Amino acid sequence: MTELLALHAVVSAPPDRVAALLLDVRPGGGSPLAATGPVEESGPVEETGTADEFVVVRGGSRLTVTVDRAARSVSTQGEWWFRGVTSVEPDPAGSRVTYRVFNVAQG
Image 1 (cartoon, rainbow, N blue to C red):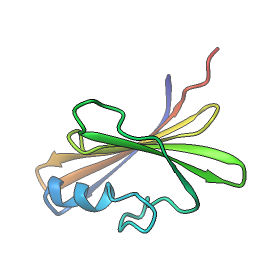
Image 2 (image 1 turned 120 degrees about the horizontal axis):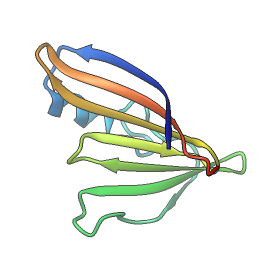
Image 3 (image 1 turned 180 degrees about the vertical axis):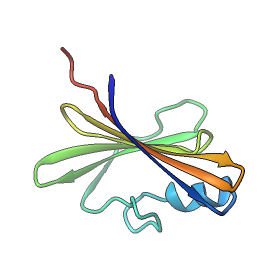
Image 4 (image 1 turned 90 degrees about the vertical axis):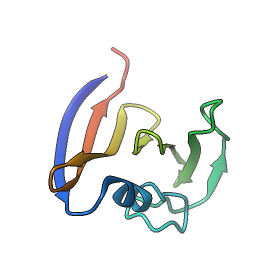
C-alpha cells in the first residue's frame, strides 16, 4: 500500500465530538462523508464489534466503507487501487482531521 496524498486540518472541537459527526457515514447520516445509493450489508469486520463495514453500490461500482469508532477513523476502498482513510486525532487546538489516499493495487 503506497500513500499518495495526505491532507490535514485542525478543528476547534474535541476529538470525540468531531468523530461522532464524521463517522456517521451510513446512508442518511450526518457526516459530509455519508454514503449515498443502495447499500449491501456485510456485517461487523471485528469480533469485538468496535467497527462496522458496508458496501455502497453505485453505477455498477462497489465501494467498501469501514468505520472504526475506537480508532476514530473511516476508510473507503474501491475495487482496484483506491483507499481513502479519514481519521480524527487530538490536537492542542481541538482535533486534527487527516485524509489520506492510498494506492492498494497489487504490483
